[in-house]
Image 1 (cartoon, helix red, strand yellow):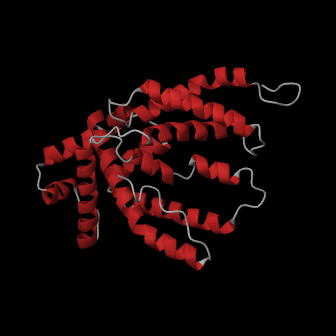
Image 2 (tube, one colour):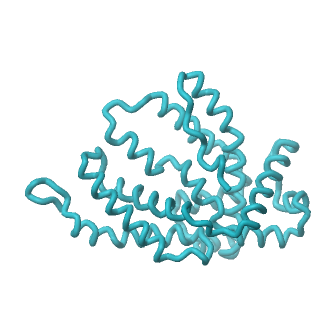
Image 3 (cartoon, one colour):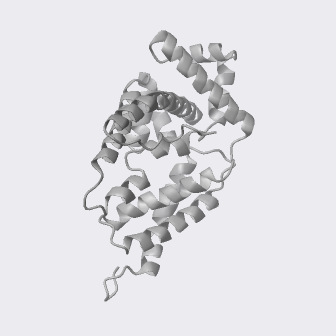
Length: 259
């Protein structure tokens, strides 16, 4: 895949990694509403692949495929951020869900059950579950920003001869908060997240394992992500204070100002 001058052969690599771009696009589509077009994701992903080729040639200290995956995913997520693909009313309702989640967790000292959330929101349980289904993918682009393998993390540190230890500590705090938040999820939602993110099962396969429908898995995912966002936003102040004590103001937690 290299020329005589040691350069990556762009055309051959693009052809080789087109299936990878499509696979990443379809995986994201599983968590997005039908209004999002798969062709748009693939197009943005191809731009990310070309960007990866250019940047990797500049001496990134990582395996190309590892780096390309992060750039492709990042380009797809950037494309989603640029369009308002979720109705404003639905976005407002999900902010209300998160506010009620935060209030109930503070009052009860534990994650509220689905029925408790629905009652606090003043809606029947079936309507609340329908809301979760309709909001499929609402928090995706913001939760992904907090993943340990976010494309910016690799780009910042892979080529650095001496990574900034203060920045690494701040990121470590955020990842530790995410791990703790996942551990506090109700068992059913924790199982769903493990099957999806660790075992790499799709929604249909998870439904078969858990004995529920694919739409029910989607509802559980939306609710779990809402819980994680609430927990992480609550940790933002602590992360900022901790990093400031170390002598640096950290980058704000992703999604803090999300619409």
